[in-house]
Image 1 (spheres, rainbow, N blue to C red):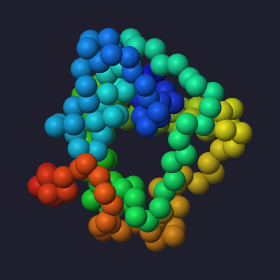
Image 2: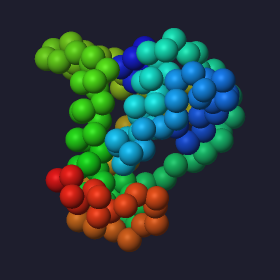
Image 3: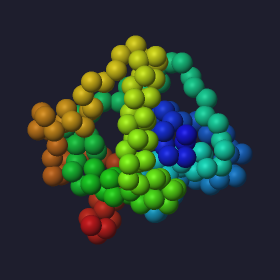
Image 4: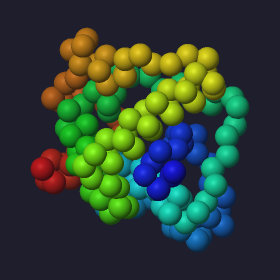
Length: 153
Protein backbone atom coordinates (compact mmCIF):
# COMPACT_ATOMS: atom_id res chain seq x y z
CA UNK A 1 0.00 0.00 0.00
CA UNK A 2 3.00 2.30 -0.21
CA UNK A 3 1.84 3.08 -3.72
CA UNK A 4 -0.84 5.42 -2.36
CA UNK A 5 1.20 6.36 0.74
CA UNK A 6 -0.99 4.15 2.89
CA UNK A 7 1.94 2.73 4.80
CA UNK A 8 3.08 4.10 8.11
CA UNK A 9 6.49 5.37 7.02
CA UNK A 10 7.98 8.17 9.07
CA UNK A 11 10.43 9.90 6.74
CA UNK A 12 12.44 11.38 9.62
CA UNK A 13 13.41 7.86 10.71
CA UNK A 14 13.59 6.16 7.32
CA UNK A 15 16.90 4.40 6.79
CA UNK A 16 17.58 3.28 3.23
CA UNK A 17 20.45 1.07 2.12
CA UNK A 18 22.84 2.42 -0.48
CA UNK A 19 21.94 -0.21 -3.12
CA UNK A 20 18.31 0.98 -2.92
CA UNK A 21 19.43 4.59 -3.50
CA UNK A 22 21.61 3.40 -6.36
CA UNK A 23 18.62 1.64 -7.91
CA UNK A 24 15.83 4.20 -7.43
CA UNK A 25 17.69 7.48 -6.95
CA UNK A 26 17.68 10.17 -4.31
CA UNK A 27 15.05 12.68 -3.24
CA UNK A 28 13.69 14.87 -6.04
CA UNK A 29 14.37 18.03 -4.01
CA UNK A 30 14.71 20.17 -7.14
CA UNK A 31 11.17 19.25 -8.20
CA UNK A 32 9.52 19.35 -4.77
CA UNK A 33 10.59 21.75 -2.05
CA UNK A 34 8.42 20.33 0.71
CA UNK A 35 7.22 16.88 -0.40
CA UNK A 36 10.29 15.20 -1.87
CA UNK A 37 10.18 12.71 1.03
CA UNK A 38 6.56 11.80 0.18
CA UNK A 39 7.53 11.21 -3.46
CA UNK A 40 10.52 9.11 -2.39
CA UNK A 41 8.33 6.88 -0.20
CA UNK A 42 5.90 6.37 -3.09
CA UNK A 43 8.83 5.52 -5.36
CA UNK A 44 9.96 2.90 -2.82
CA UNK A 45 6.50 1.37 -3.06
CA UNK A 46 6.41 1.51 -6.84
CA UNK A 47 9.74 -0.32 -6.97
CA UNK A 48 8.45 -3.04 -4.63
CA UNK A 49 10.73 -2.16 -1.73
CA UNK A 50 9.75 -3.44 1.68
CA UNK A 51 9.89 -1.21 4.72
CA UNK A 52 10.58 -2.77 8.09
CA UNK A 53 9.65 -1.50 11.52
CA UNK A 54 11.85 -0.72 14.52
CA UNK A 55 9.69 -1.07 17.65
CA UNK A 56 11.29 1.92 19.36
CA UNK A 57 10.49 5.61 19.55
CA UNK A 58 13.18 7.20 17.37
CA UNK A 59 11.67 10.65 16.94
CA UNK A 60 9.00 12.64 18.71
CA UNK A 61 7.63 15.21 16.27
CA UNK A 62 5.78 18.12 17.76
CA UNK A 63 3.72 20.90 16.26
CA UNK A 64 4.55 24.40 17.46
CA UNK A 65 4.00 27.93 16.27
CA UNK A 66 7.57 28.46 15.05
CA UNK A 67 7.77 25.30 12.97
CA UNK A 68 7.43 24.77 9.28
CA UNK A 69 4.04 23.10 9.78
CA UNK A 70 2.62 26.35 11.22
CA UNK A 71 3.64 28.40 8.17
CA UNK A 72 0.67 28.77 5.80
CA UNK A 73 2.98 29.26 2.80
CA UNK A 74 4.59 25.90 3.45
CA UNK A 75 1.36 24.04 4.16
CA UNK A 76 -0.24 25.41 0.97
CA UNK A 77 2.81 24.38 -1.03
CA UNK A 78 2.78 20.93 0.59
CA UNK A 79 -0.85 20.43 -0.43
CA UNK A 80 -0.07 21.57 -3.97
CA UNK A 81 2.98 19.32 -4.29
CA UNK A 82 1.23 16.33 -2.69
CA UNK A 83 -1.61 16.65 -5.23
CA UNK A 84 0.90 16.67 -8.12
CA UNK A 85 2.79 13.68 -6.71
CA UNK A 86 -0.39 11.73 -5.95
CA UNK A 87 -1.62 12.23 -9.50
CA UNK A 88 1.79 11.21 -10.88
CA UNK A 89 1.60 7.96 -8.90
CA UNK A 90 -1.95 7.14 -9.97
CA UNK A 91 -3.96 7.90 -6.85
CA UNK A 92 -7.61 7.27 -7.61
CA UNK A 93 -10.05 10.18 -7.70
CA UNK A 94 -13.65 10.47 -6.60
CA UNK A 95 -15.19 8.11 -4.08
CA UNK A 96 -12.26 5.66 -4.24
CA UNK A 97 -9.90 8.42 -3.09
CA UNK A 98 -12.11 9.07 -0.06
CA UNK A 99 -12.25 5.34 0.75
CA UNK A 100 -8.44 5.06 0.55
CA UNK A 101 -7.97 8.20 2.66
CA UNK A 102 -10.40 7.02 5.35
CA UNK A 103 -8.84 3.54 5.40
CA UNK A 104 -5.36 5.10 5.71
CA UNK A 105 -6.41 7.31 8.61
CA UNK A 106 -8.02 4.41 10.46
CA UNK A 107 -4.99 2.18 9.82
CA UNK A 108 -2.60 4.89 10.98
CA UNK A 109 -4.51 5.42 14.23
CA UNK A 110 -4.55 1.65 14.81
CA UNK A 111 -0.77 1.51 14.23
CA UNK A 112 -0.26 4.42 16.63
CA UNK A 113 -2.31 2.59 19.23
CA UNK A 114 -0.25 -0.58 18.78
CA UNK A 115 3.16 1.17 18.58
CA UNK A 116 2.66 4.08 20.99
CA UNK A 117 -0.22 2.94 23.10
CA UNK A 118 -2.38 5.94 22.19
CA UNK A 119 -4.14 7.59 19.27
CA UNK A 120 -4.59 11.19 18.16
CA UNK A 121 -8.20 12.23 18.49
CA UNK A 122 -7.41 15.66 17.06
CA UNK A 123 -4.73 15.98 14.33
CA UNK A 124 -1.79 18.27 15.12
CA UNK A 125 -2.60 20.57 12.21
CA UNK A 126 -6.10 21.13 13.67
CA UNK A 127 -4.59 21.95 17.07
CA UNK A 128 -2.40 24.62 15.47
CA UNK A 129 -5.51 26.18 13.93
CA UNK A 130 -7.54 25.93 17.14
CA UNK A 131 -4.76 27.61 19.11
CA UNK A 132 -4.40 30.19 16.34
CA UNK A 133 -0.74 29.26 15.92
CA UNK A 134 -0.93 29.02 12.13
CA UNK A 135 0.83 32.08 10.75
CA UNK A 136 0.99 33.58 7.29
CA UNK A 137 4.73 33.44 7.74
CA UNK A 138 6.95 32.03 10.49
CA UNK A 139 10.66 32.39 11.20
CA UNK A 140 11.85 28.82 11.03
CA UNK A 141 15.25 27.66 9.85
CA UNK A 142 15.18 25.20 6.98
CA UNK A 143 16.92 24.22 3.78
CA UNK A 144 13.90 25.48 1.86
CA UNK A 145 14.49 28.56 -0.26
CA UNK A 146 11.36 30.55 0.57
CA UNK A 147 11.89 32.83 -2.44
CA UNK A 148 11.46 29.80 -4.72
CA UNK A 149 8.35 28.83 -2.78
CA UNK A 150 6.79 32.24 -3.34
CA UNK A 151 7.65 32.17 -7.07
CA UNK A 152 5.68 28.93 -7.57
CA UNK A 153 2.38 30.39 -6.32
